[in-house]
Length: 286
Length: 221
Image (tube, rainbow over all chains, first blue to last red):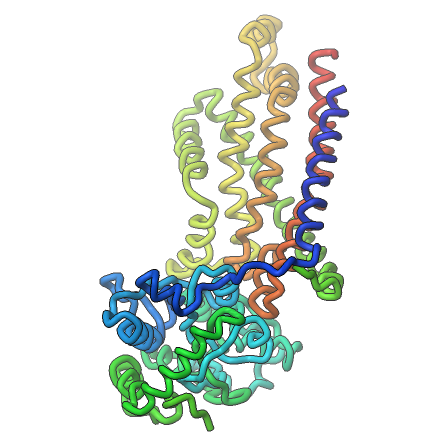
């Protein structure tokens, strides 16, 4: 008798799941826009921007708990130009792999988390004009320097889930086994503990990291294609997208992103790096 | 919402593979937790000097810290102290450490349910300590503890979902990875739910039956 009850319960569980699947699979009726338009944001009085917490010097939280970095510098300016107050921004900390979800579920208005423009991503979100340039790089211990992708065969390469580095090696070099982490901090810690032979990420990040971590060098400085980093908004949020595009063109005239570079990246990069290889003004990318 | 069925079909085998990884690690973790839990329970039951206290402290420590923190300690902390463990070793060790405390408490419920009269009867018959445990206490204690032990087994299998912090390919890792690369969130999450259900529902039914059988032997109904 008891087993009959158990069986019924199991059946109920399956039935609930089947119902959920049907709900998901049913063609969606024209659903309400899952984003807040420019007017709605202005009415709310603050803008929600998704940034990184662990990608210095682009997006990180400093020892006082304040958001800092190149992306954050831009985010504060957006708040200033929208509301006349650079503090009218609510920072939402995101992981690389969850950036699209945050937009799709309307948890943020804009993603400014060093988001590289890719065709896959452009299908899911709308990118504004770019404000930075990036390629991939590979960092490795100076004592076992990796200078060519061929050297990685049969070794473990560390990547961060949901980054362009992961996608590049998954599609172009399936022969290299990847160790994938959710957070940058975990990935770089794993490299320090020598869990992998090298770590692949945005070269702009690796330049900064290797300067702060002697013993590691960016043995491969340029890999893949030169890509653009741009703000992203939810698919279809045209009012916000247009505003951002105008904003980036306007800021280009005052060379705002060079100021952002000097304030946030230069202290880390020093004079080794040409700002023109990282910064772009007015959304023009060559 | 329209689901991308081609995507789901393509990656379903990956989820099966990831489930096997999780189950393999869970198997060892559960096996070691049972041994550890039984040992701790015996030390506590007999109030073994020193070991009884240590077991008590361990049970509190393991049950009151999250597995995530334990894994971080093993994986990222220990190398700083010169002890390097592979990800899978950390996973099994972490799960055993966590599970040991829970299993000890489950066994305790069984041990305490064995009536004093039974033990005294055994002693008056001249059974030694080992005989008493093996022939009088354990068979009865086990029957009482089975539901709690079974709940722990399910719990520990579900806990494997955080192995992804160790870069191990369990189903949760795979789902998050696919979402991060291809942004098919609904498909990946649905596959994830189905994977856990496919693993846990049959196991749950099996454990329920097992429970009935064991208790049937004890109570004769």
